[in-house]
Image (cartoon, rainbow over all chains, first blue to last red):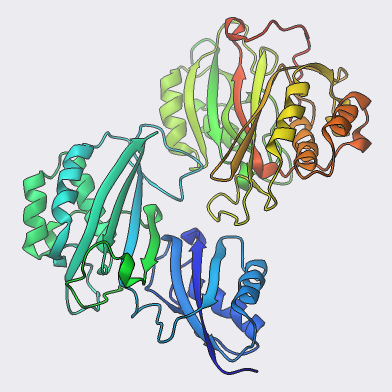
Length: 267
Length: 267
C-alpha cells in the first residue's frame, strides 16, 4: 500500500440498462458498478464521486468522476483493468492522476449536454434507445430563436423539477444551439456553468412545443422569465439526453464565469 | 373476407434480441413475431416468407417478405397497424400489394449486405451491438485490393459454412467495396445475386486477417480460388452484419445476371 492517491476517470456509458448514476437500493447504477469494479482492483472499499448525477436512461459521452485509494496501481493500470472488468456499456476513456485539490463535482466549471431528436416519419430501430422520435416536422428556426435567447444569465426556475436541491436557480448559459436536421437528426447542445434538476429535459420539452407550433417564441420567452415550472412543457424523455463533457480548465472557458455556484444537479 | 391478396413488406430490424429470422422452437425470431402480429390483424393464421434467413444477431435495413391473406385490409392498413403492434426493434418501412407471381425469395435478383467494423483503440458503448470492434489498425488498402478481386463470378465454397443447402456454390458478385475509416468506422459492402450460408461473415473474417497482415493479398486470392473452407479465416461476429437491400427490379440491375440460381441462403 502506498500513500493515498486521487484518480480522475473520464467515462462514456450507455444509460439504457441503469437506474441512473447514483447508487441506490432498488436498481443497478453506474456508480455502483464502477465502485464494485474499482474495489476489486484496489483491494479496498471505494467511494466514487461524480461530476453530477445523470437520471435513469440518460447517457454519457464524457462523464467525469474521481476516487481516492491507497492502492499503488497506476492510473493506466486502472484504465486497462477496469475496461476488462466493466460491462460493455460502460467504458473508461481516460484514467489520470487528479490535480491537487481536484473534486469531480466542485471543481467543475462548465458542462455540455446534448439532446438528440429524430424528426422524421419513420423511427430508426437502431437509435430507439438514443433519441426522442418525433414524426411531425419541427420548426427548427423557431426553436433556434428560442435557444438564442436562452444564452446568458437566467433564473431557470421555470425549467427546474421539484426536488432540485440547489438554492440558487440562476445559471449562466454559455451557448445554446441546434444543428440539423441531418438525416432527420436534430441535436440541441447546451453549455452552462451548471444545470438544475431535469433542466435540459424540461427545456427541450418546451422547445419541442415551440417547434410544433403549440407554443410561440414569445410565449417561450415569457415562460423563461416567469420563474414558474407550471407554465413550461412536458419533460423530454431521458433516452435522448447525453452528458457530453465536463470542463475543469479555467483557461478553456469560452466566456468569463460570472456566476460563482458550481451547480451540478442532474440536468 | 375478400379474395386472397399477396402483400409485400419491406422491414428494418435490430436483430440483437432475436434468434435470427426463421421461426424455431427455442427462441424468439423475427418471422414468428411478424406472423403473430399479422395474424392478429388478419384474423387468420399467416405464413410469412422472407427473401432469406438472417442469423441470430444480424440486422436488417431492408429485409423483404411477403404473405397471402383473405383479409380485406389494405396494405397501408397493415403498415400502420403492424407498426403499432410490433416491438420497437422491428419496423415496417413499406407495405404494398405484391406484383403478380411475386415471391420474396425466388423473385429476388440481387442482395446487398454491409459489414461494419469499428477500427480504433476505444470501443463505442452505443455501437456495441452494431459493429465488430477491432482495436488494431487495419490495412484497408490491402483489404480493398482483395475486394476488387472478389468481384465477378466465383465459386465461393471457401467462404460457405457447412450446412449450406445450395447445391451451386457459384455466385456473381456485382460489387464489393470498402468505405472509411470514418471516425473509425469501416463499411464493407457486397452486392451479389445471392449469398451462401455465412458467406459474408466468413469473407469478412478472412479480409480482417489480410487487414492485420496475418494473410497476404496473394494468400487471400489462393483461398478464394481453393474451394476449401478450411483455409479461410474465422467467421466475423453476427452483430456487425446488415442486410441492406433486396432487389427485385430487373431494370435496376447494375450488370447482366449470368448466374441463374437465386441463391438466397443466409449470408
